[in-house]
Length: 108
Length: 114
Image 1: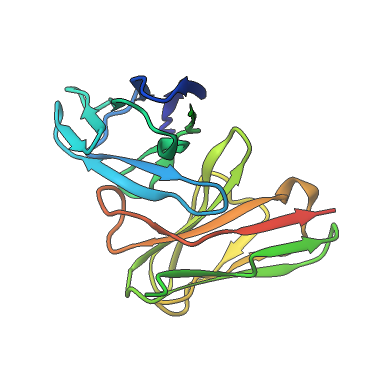
Image 2 (image 1 turned 120 degrees about the horizontal axis):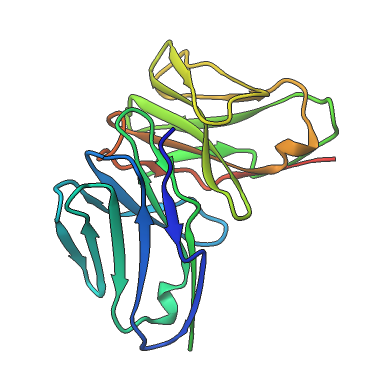
């Protein structure tokens, strides 16, 4: 069974601070996705990483796929209240499974 | 653009009742799936389908049935609801199977079983 472990489970920080959240597995994946979910809505895809060691940037968000394609990180620079939400990583070659998520709260 | 449409948005059932959660997509996606989301548990895959006439079990399939008679529709049936099935249910679709095909989600059905 493929498992995706996300850490931390909860994170509450002040506006303007930097943060990193992690997604780890013992399995190797051909690609990995990050989603963000806001209350009352379904998750929305942020990025897909495909190549080991790949780094993708989305404005203040930086995503990295581990060299061995077993882990990934999401770094947010100068967090803003609009970044508040549930961040989920997902992977799978035939069926997509999700980690339990990191609930991020940015305090103004 | 409608995308993925789920109905109803809210439902309350008594233990033992049956119901069908509807999911429809207008993007001509072959892959569709159902997830349930519980506090602290993330999204857990119930059933998925790679095309019309083909379905398969996910991580937590017990107590749920699915069918895929058309590309557009993928209903989820609860035959005899139990309080453990209280959850928020999300339907998703994508053009291909597995990552890196992005999943497009509906806005969910919040189900309470008393």
